[in-house]
Image 1 (cartoon, rainbow, N blue to C red):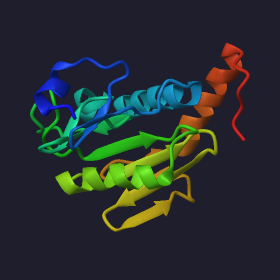
Image 2: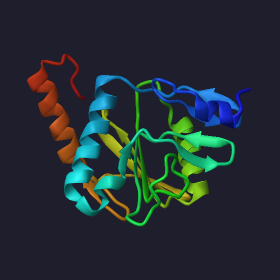
Image 3: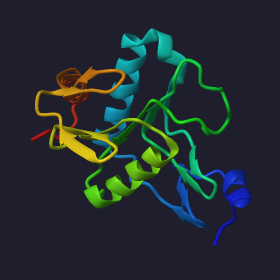
Image 4: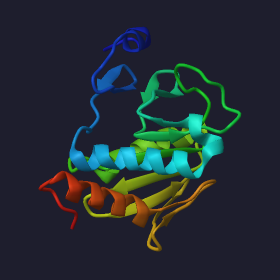
Length: 176
């Protein structure tokens, strides 16, 4: 068991979730995951300049007193406080699936976000080029290719940019 104060005083690389005394590693670091995080951050910052400072990758979000999650990307409201650790519900949390991730674990994560008041979460699968919009009590695939909430993002632009970046960088991995 690790205490909250010990967790907060420790630097993990990559950062880890903290769930009721346990430090949990996150699946990150692969090309598709990292590239998707970068594309989502860039796209949101360029299309929603009023939220620019609040589009944050991999930041600690305290969802309960003894529970911290690290969303791949979160978006804070313009009026949100600028604290070192996010304790005010973001308007959006984005999770990018890695091959090792399961939807069961993603559901647990987004339930934590909903518990703190996050109204919508997006789940992106860069390998399968699919995505879902989650709201409390609902999980819907974005069959029309647009992720929605207070803000919107067309998947084609994110996945198109990833494909272009892979092609120009000589990456061997291709999306199916």
